[in-house]
Length: 430
Ligand SMILES: *Cc1c(COP(=O)(O)O)cnc(C)c1O
Image (cartoon, rainbow, N blue to C red; front, side):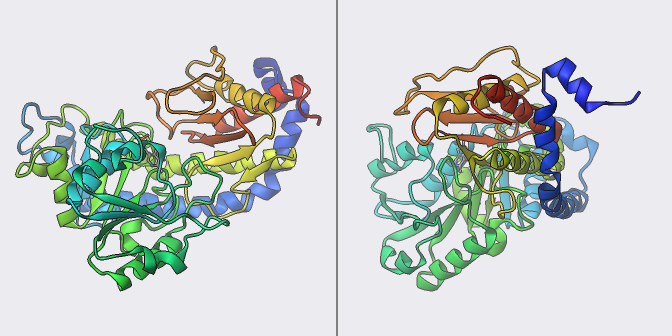
C-alpha cells in the first residue's frame, strides 16, 4: 500500500491541498527544532530507564494493595523511581492526590506554619491556587485563615523574574517561595531551568532556610534537568499532565528534600502516618508505564506545539513561544485578534480528536471566569492535558492555549482541520 497524504486527507478529512502545502512549507523551519527536542527526549528516556533499573523494578510491583496499604512494595518503588528521576531525596506519587492543585496545596499546608509568609516569585499564581492561598473565597480554611500571609513579586514586562526586588520582598517571616515554571495561561514565556537556578541561588543567599517550592506542572521532561537539580527544595505536579505519559488515570507527585516531602505527606494523610499508608489498588502499573512513556510523549506534544507555532506564524498570527524559542513547558499560545478565528481553531482541534470528534465545542459561561470560555478536548482520560486540548476565554486579544498530544500526527491533523475550517469560513486566505 502506498500512502498518498494528499488524496487521503482530502477524501477522509476534507483537507485541501492548500492546507497541506502550508504544512509542508514549514518543514525546514521545524526540523532543527525537532532535532533539539529529540536529543532531550533521548537523554530523559535513558534517565527514566536507569531509575527503573536501579530500583529493580519488577512485575511483582504492578499488583496492588487494599485497605491501609501497608508494605506496598509497588508504591514504595514508584516513589523511589520518581525520587531518582527528579534527583531528589524523597518522593511521593499517589492516585490519592487528585490533581496538581492538590499536590501543590499539600506542599504549602504541610510546610508552612502560622505567622509564616509565602512569597510568590512569578506573579499571580495559577488560578486554582487563589483559594488555597486565600486571595479569593472565605471560610474554606485557606492559608490566610491559618495565619499565613502572602506576598507577590510580579514578573517584569518581558516575563522575566524581577531579580532586583527579591531582596526587599524577603523578610524574617518569609518561610517559603513559590516559583511557577510554566506560563500557565498567560502570555509570558515559561521559565527555563537556568532562570530557576539563578532565582533559587539568589534567594538562598539572602535567607538560606527558605523552602523553595516549584510548581512543575507542564514542565517535566521539557528540559534535560528538573528544578530539584538546581536547588528547589520541593516540586509538585499532576499525573494527568507530563509525567503520567497519558497512561496514569489520575494522581499527583511531590519530590524534594526528605523533610519537606514528609511534611507534605503528613498533610495528605495524617501526622505520623505520612507516606507509609495508602492502598495503591491496581494503579501502580499505569503509573510506572506512564512515567516510562513520559519523555517520549512530552517530545510528541512539544513537536505538535512547534508545528502549531510554525503554521500559525506562516498564516500571519502571533504566537508565543515562537517556532524556535526555547521552551520551558508544553503550552502553545496563539493570538487570533478576533473571536471567529479563535472559535474555528478550537473547533478544528476537537474535530481531529480520536474521542468526541463529533461534538462541536461552543463558548460557555463557566464559574470562576469573567468571560465565556471555549474548550476543545477529546481525551481518553477526563481533563487530561498531556492529551491534545485547546482552550480560550472569549475576550480580546482572543488567545488560544493549546497543549498536549500523545502522538504528533494527532496534533498535526487537528491543526490542519482547524486551518481548513478557517479557510472555509473565509477567515484566512491561502
Ligand atoms: C495545571 C496546573 C496547575 C493545577 O493543576 P490541576 O491538576 O489542574 O489542579 C497548577 N499550576 C500549573 C502551572 C498548571 O499548569
